[in-house]
Image 1 (spheres, one colour):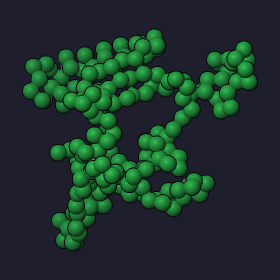
Image 2: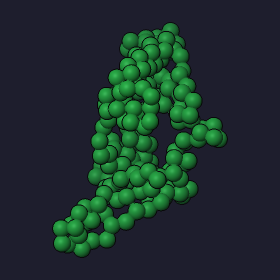
Image 3: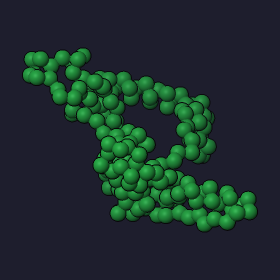
Image 4: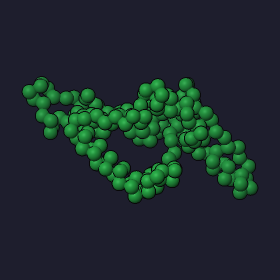
Length: 190
């Protein structure tokens, strides 16, 4: 089973309603670039060499961006859908005829919606059920116990009630009072 390493942290934002509360966030071990992921795919019994896999992935990336910039959604079966959203300036335009795309739009975002079809469901609740969680502190304690100190590591299984993820986690970049993932919320207009 996959293991998600997490750390528990305290909200230090004194302006937040959740100030002083404790949450969990994923502790990533490594970021794989396209080359490393290509090598990994090729090692899984693929008939294609890492260079061929890399070439396909690079073509996928460029074509994905091309399609998104042409107002198209891209659905990858078994994974999910990529699409774009606009982030508008706070407050919006006074009227429709006063709206100016260059002035009133702050950002164009690439979004991803995980697959939710029954056989390939990787929505956040289903993904949570598939994961095993390991507190980074238990890993550190395990290393200490191997060095002669004692510690009690451990893992915890996720479930429908938030598992050990801390419920409404604020993610790595805050995400506001009620969480909202690793990059927080936004003012999307679909």
